[in-house]
Length: 83
Ligand SMILES: [Zn+2]
Image (cartoon, rainbow, N blue to C red):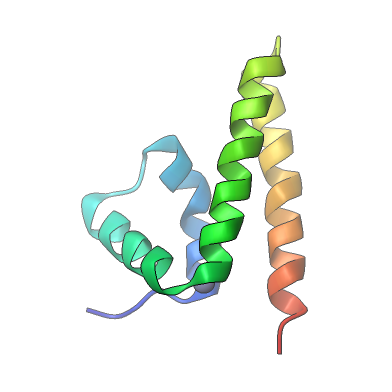
């Protein structure tokens, strides 16, 4: 079993939040969460934002996508800024 990199993690986040991740990928995703504090915090942040968007939105589907895109951009920038 190979470990997920942070980059792969980011790519799977949206599927994970949609519940669309296949069981095998989900297992590796959870494993990465266990050992990577940074990704854990960012997943937390995304879930909080998603909940807020759902609670606020009269167009939840569209708002979610835009909100998630913004978050994922932030996440990628954060990853790039690391050594
Ligand atoms: Zn990570």
